[in-house]
Image (cartoon, rainbow over all chains, first blue to last red; front, side, top):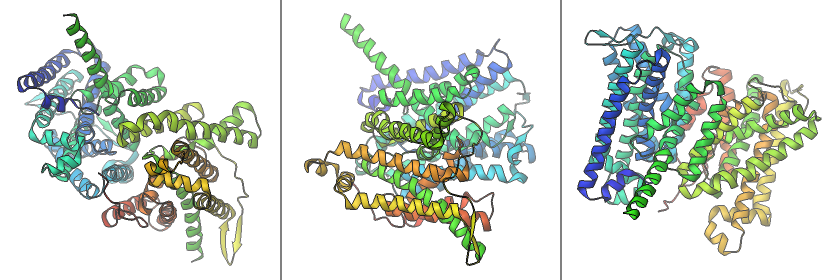
Length: 335
Length: 292
């Protein structure tokens, strides 16, 4: 998998700076568009847009783990579940404010990520996949069986949406705008992280772990950190998911959902900043619009990802980049 | 005590089935670096295909069985290798692993939409009576499963170790470059491994479906247990997969009986984490040397 970050590094400094600014401008512009987008879309349309952003946050975290650090995590949906349940339980049963619950969800999933990753990464890279696979199933079992805490299969309902300095965000539109702001903040944080020396180290690990190690990068520590931060993004996504849907049960956090999230990373383009948004668009929004297709859509989605993996493992972002390069070369030749 | 032995035998029976799936998983990993996350669906699907052939064409069971098995071997033995693995292996292990996840979703949802969302009964090949042996009542079905599964594994071991073709396959798994230099048709050997994997999945499917019924979602648990068995036993060894499979089956059966039916799934998972912490190369595995 090629990575735009590496190409940035290879380019001359002013050009790299320009490209990064383009990413920043695109993020902010996207947020402004999404702020106004739901006008006239109705409650359901607005809900789907918000869901898209919330899932994008979860996919973004997994993109850091898979696309930048080159590790497979099969527990991103479980981390979303931890975040969603932590937020739901803290806000409904203990009256904790949503903001505190959001922070706690992130910290909790970060800590669990460290705990899981530490033993798994001691061995070989594939083992993180297996450990997270086991963890995912364990989380699902606990969510389903510990009825006193999680409500079992009945789940938790009446999850309140937060307030913002006294403004209640109960309406679909108000909450959507809140989600836009949180998504923007989390995207900017990730954008900054990937540009920082840490982010460069993550990419170095993925491209050539042996070389990265010989350059003095503590590969295990960096891989662990990338996985833990990616997991924390899952927790953040869950903390937004619970008040968005206002009802949670174990099913959206099962293992198969973790598989789907991975497919979304790959479909959008692993290692691309905007890949997760494209991936979540294909994996979450399109099936909502194509409801009549039912679970046939899931088959189609998986088949598309399979075809993409054969033709262009860099996903839709990679295809777009290829197309862009071809266009540029053509226009350059004409001149 | 009698009860304990009955649970033990039930555990060995299901464990032998997990071992079949785990051995296929290990074989495919060895020869082509494919981590097949669809392994559980590979065991789920043959039974579904057989029932589908019977239903669609109104065939007797044996004819439907032959068609179902042939279709499965063709698509998920040879087809899987040629269409999914071959074009993708050059991109590396990770994209291929993700591709098998996509495949697992296609197989699962395909079985749900194309066949049935409900569990369907699958005929047992042996009588399901109980026999009384020294005061212990044992299910004939469990005994038959143990016999068939072990016969299949024995046959495989003989093939791999005792025939020329099997030895060529082994050489391919150990060192494809040297095998090619020695004139072994490496590509054909890899294809053979995929066919063997599919055949093992068919045997596992025929054995497990009479007990757990034929249902699209069965692959999740079977696949999970097959991975755990392969890792617990040692990722690189057929012998290890066998030991791991039996261990997982017994642990699961005893956990369901004596600990908690709700958390029976958790016991093999804990076993997995413990193994990764203490002896990551697996019970029967050797430490791998690092290949740069």
